Amino acid sequence: MLCKINWRSGMAKTIIGLIGRNGSGKDTAANMLAQKLNAQMIVYSGTINNALMIFLDKEQIGRDNQACMAAFLRGKYGDGIIAQGVKRELDKKPDGVYLLVGARDDGDYELVRSFPGSFFIVVNADVKIRWERVRLRKEKSDDDISFDGFLANESLASEEKVASLSKLADYVVDNSGTIKELEAIIDNVVRKIQSV
Picture 1: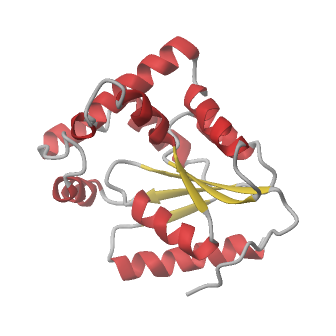
Picture 2: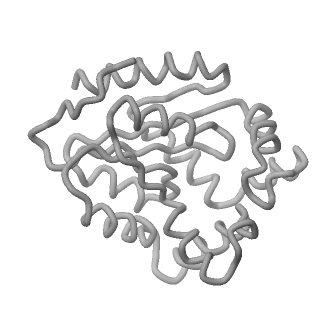
């Protein structure tokens, strides 16, 4: 286990963006990173879920509802509207290390990069592995999906944007293996981040 310290104790906020496609294991990776870096997590989809929960029960909120709400907000207010909500949340927080999980558009990416010394990490895994994980976790109402349905969801605008944003990452985490292998990769990324 690595030390849980703020290695940048002179900086107001250190921001680490984390991106990954559905089922890549970004939440698992985020929990590991948060623990090892003593970071607080802010999830981009949390702002969308908060809006949806005004109208729907938690168990009714699925990827399709999140995508619709996000598309509506971005269509009405432009890319960056969700990042604007996350930024407002960040502005209320004290100095420290923050992990912003689940970037989906250029505005999310720009928010992370607007902080000096920020980092951007992508979590990847083979598409079949991701599909199997999604079906097993049954987190959302639409997680029990066929492989063809999963592939169709990969072409949603939000998922395609994740693929293009992934090319801008500072670090790539391949999460196609075991939890132990993931932790070793995360430890290596943390060492690299802390050495900067």
